[in-house]
Picture 1 (cartoon, rainbow, N blue to C red):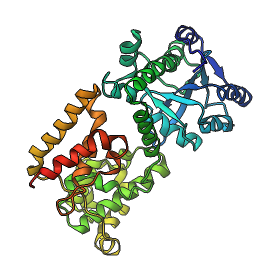
Picture 2 (picture 1 turned 120 degrees about the vertical axis):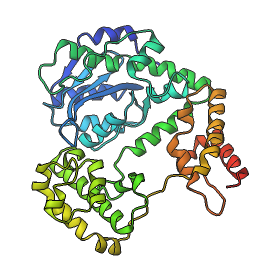
Picture 3 (picture 1 turned 30 degrees about the vertical axis):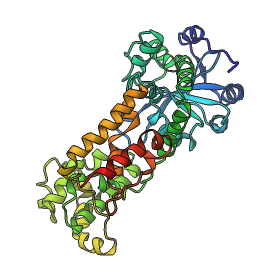
Picture 4 (picture 1 turned 30 degrees about the horizontal axis):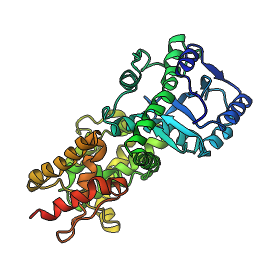
Length: 388
């Protein structure tokens, strides 16, 4: 990597970041960024009373300084989309899940390839799910202020404090990335990190935009009869559509607990619906008839389109085997000096156990790839010895 990313230069630039306020300026900067080996990215947005995030700022750091792309004034993002598609430019993020969601919503494009410094910290055993401030302090011995985490990023002008805080969010990413890549390569883990980054990108698009699978998250409802599960499925799918149409959070339509209360009470009159705990009068007035309608049509819906069952919790008989499986992962993580949560996640272990067919198990997709040789085969061998 011949381009020099000078940490002190970027720290200095963060005191007076450059605003990009015209489409022409964005195109000019993107033209230069396309020539670099990497750029750092971050976003600031508001998502309190809306379903979709409202972009407030896109921060960029290159080898020369820190920049603010202002989504409140720009119209043509095609140069940024082109940059995101340029796979010769590595895009640096920290805990980038929400940033990626915003980019996909705002631009219809995800940056590729990416490097997430939080994930890398887990691989290197620095800590799991490390916050940016703690990571910067750990790796660079720099203490950052947390003072602007709940700022209004839609106000203009931003305060000097806001500007400095937002710029520092990208200023340290190149130094962090260079340090982490060097250690990952030394430990033979860089290809694992790249695979993990690709998995993060693959998981970003919403695989259930209509909300028809959401009901399966309610594990406590696994015993319900098909009619009630169908009603839960249809209500959650309706809530998803309404939340998106009205651009309001899901819990402003119906909270999860309220959904379960409705299924439990089964109110088929407005009077009965009004007695459901925590169901707001505004929701009853606006959507009460629709909610009752789903309950009345539940039996018909269950017959027309039988709902997939909700996974029942694992039996108590798995308590001891689960400890043994987790111990294998923990010991391997200790051997590799990495965070055990990176190596084996609870949801992956659950998915593995649910592959059982006639006493045989197979690795789910999330335990294939680099995890197969590192931990997957050992988990399968342990399962094979179990007599369950």
